[in-house]
Amino acid sequence: MAVSTQAASDRQVGTQPFRAVRPWTLAITFGLVATIVCAAGSWIPSLWGDEATTLLSARRPVTTLLPMLFHVDAVHGLYYLGMHGWIRLVGESPFALRFPSAVAIGFAVAAVTLLAGRRGGPRAAVVAGIVACVLPRMTYAGEEARSFAFTAAAAAWLTVLLLWLVDGGGRTAPASVRRSCWAVYAAGLALTSYLFLYTASIAVAHIGILLLSRASRPALRSWAVATGCALLALAPLVLLAYFERSQISYLGNQALDPSTLVWMPWFGNVWVAIAAWACIALAVGAAAHARWGRAGREAAQGASLSVSATLVGACWLILPTGTLLLINLVFPMYAARYSTFAAPAAALLVAEGLLVLGRLVSRRAGVPAVAVTGAGLLAFVAVCTPVYLSQRGPYSKNNSDWAEVSAAMGTAAQPGDAVVFDESTKPSQRPRLAMRTYPAGFTAVSDPTLRTPYDRNIGWADRVYAIPTAAELGRFDSVRRVWLVENDVDGSLDHYGLAELQALGFEETGRSIPTHRTMLIELTR
Image 1 (cartoon, rainbow, N blue to C red):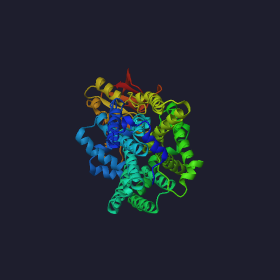
Image 2 (image 1 turned 90 degrees about the vertical axis):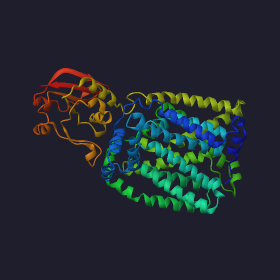
Image 3 (image 1 turned 45 degrees about the vertical axis):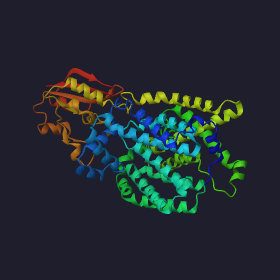
Image 4 (image 1 turned 180 degrees about the vertical axis):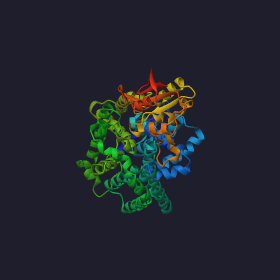
């Protein structure tokens, strides 16, 4: 397929400062920058419910992890296995848990930079690299101990490989090399879907790219065979996910609102969304005019169409997420963070929009395109900066304050004390997870209501006794002081277990320790 006239002009105009820089050099540079940006301050926010799931699953022996995956969280199983080995090498600190995600985002940004550079030249690569480094969904995924950063990286590199095969050097490579690369594509699609099942929908974006660019029949046939093999390999995971669907049944109670559709998947807040969607509209509008305008129709007659960065980004951003949203209408299964694998596409489109803005202003006002694009890029970085800083506050992960709870308990508790946790909230917010994610503060206390530790369950969390049952088993017999750890959201205490403890003879001393959204209450007898 021919390289588009627009992309070729981008390579020729205003790229002299970068002409000697190889595409791979830019990709590696921005990949390293993105890793540093994501890793910076990643240790500050307290771990939250989803990350607790990661940590507790990764801690388990493989002999109990595998049975767990046959009951819960099969869609994250490959990630948990990887983290199982990782924490044995480097430990369990928040920085250690989150650093692999920062590296994964570095790989995603490198792929975006390379893709933009090959489609539009060095300037396009630089703009795309910078946008990808600051895009809120990318910087958030890069400081979270979940699989989503890896899905973004895998989707990005699968797209780079696809484009190389159908619109790059792969077209002229020997047949044996092409077959091997299609096999790598199939294996990569299967593996990234085992990291998180929904990433399989990137295949919808790829067929959209192939059809809209009028790919050759051999390319379509090769893609179909590779994708079919990958989907066949996914059959066991699909079955497990179906049988474990009750895990996400709560999504049926969450209505899709503008925030879920417009800014939460990729942009963080409304102001970033306004700037980003304006750039995306510019990019898509310019690409549509170039393709379906009069000049574009005449140029395309009898010829195959080029695969522009805008075409790639639009298919990648819209088609997979649209597919998930359509499924969600009949089977609730969508949350905004599940579209993280499309975040690199958002970065690519925003960058294309900034380049289009530079060309338009340059033509009409005579201002150098590079200056206009640079100013727009600086403005986008500026609007993303407050979101980046807010992501690195101590309570930025779902308002979790477990690090603070552990520190308070470590200061107040004495050997022989017991702790009772509020068990009335949903599992991912239970303060018991403070002990599991930050155990140092709880070394002096006993846990009388613990029934079965998480690593001996088929689920990922602890099982507990009710307070009266624990008392009947003699768990409180030698206890003279209890710390009741209650959820305290907006000053509304749950008062879980207070009456039961008072029935055992414990009384409040009047001493309580508030944290961000938790209250530690002292009771003695």
